[in-house]
Length: 275
Length: 218
Image (cartoon, rainbow over all chains, first blue to last red; front, side, top):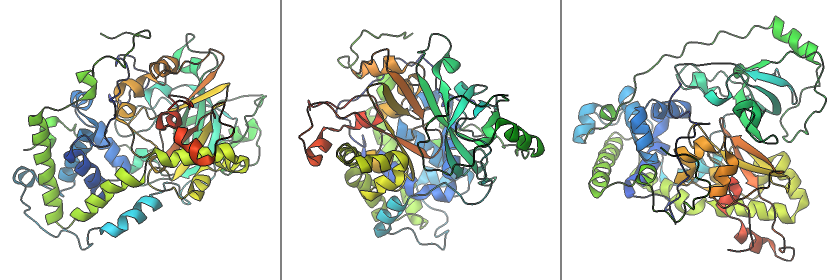
């Protein structure tokens, strides 16, 4: 969605302000919110769904609240939406139902394993064959979904070049809305600063951003790129294809229709906050 | 309304209440109460174990942090074969030192040189390579940095005391997916005789984000 969280390129926020000797957590509640979200998020949403819940915050609240208030607001809202908690329970602190899961909660000794193993988002399923190669010129689509996306406004409708072919990853635009992981190729795309920001940007500077294949269209070109960048990642490199064969492949393989993301209500301060 | 104040020293100014979001005692109390209630509910419903909550917080308070990334950098500075592995398959190379996991499952390390300066952000939220740098500082997750680093990196870097010549190419990396980026800073001159452990002591979190360079001054 086109929310205030999508702030790349805004210049109204003033200087970067740093807190001297900043503690990891400013207060015990921040620490609890961090741990609770880490351990409880999986019950109410995917990581992508959680991010989208933060994006759905009231914009003024988002901008004026602290970071862990974002987590708290999103977690509460998702817990309510998924029926994990009720408004009455949040107000009273008393559970009306107990033991809602057969699965026992994670014990403390499982934490180091969970943390060190992580939750990889690469997949061997879905769309495995990348459409683009390192060095290919691409244009980002002008997508403006009402749901979750990781294509920021500042890179929409811009011409760039494939820098890394990362492999196939979970697609957040659907995964945030319980519409499936729909894994597809992910790329690091390079943009000239001037392409994004105009002629006053530094001639030499570049912006690199990771974009899913569904965000990209090929740039038609009769000549291949004259200078291919050095490959810097071990990710699978497909055989070098000429521009014409990519175009042919694109013409015969229409991209699947994207499911409409269902918009959810804005998470207001009032909705989430009960004390 | 704020405009670009490149020449002001913002480090000496007091914290801007708009951006530091400090709570009043009453607000903090209300938040503590609200969080306590949720935690009580989750425990009552058998969803979380309070001891596990503590263990999770402690892990990020003690076990993970920039000291991990500093070791990766120091190893790369002293071992050319390791550096090559780090730049071609960062996840595996970082894993060699025992660092891995949440928010670092897919790592890419980008190298600073005299001609190329890299800096990392997440304009959309706060994505950051936890296994090597721990949890991000508030400024990294806040509007001024996230919004301005992509459009005016030179100005933002100057606020950190990093002045780059116009001939240097700045590469800003926006962590929009689950790939996590870390900067391999340049090794400062005059450190040729230092051992790996001492070199690691020089490497700061800010240098691995890319907003500063590593210096020999602490």
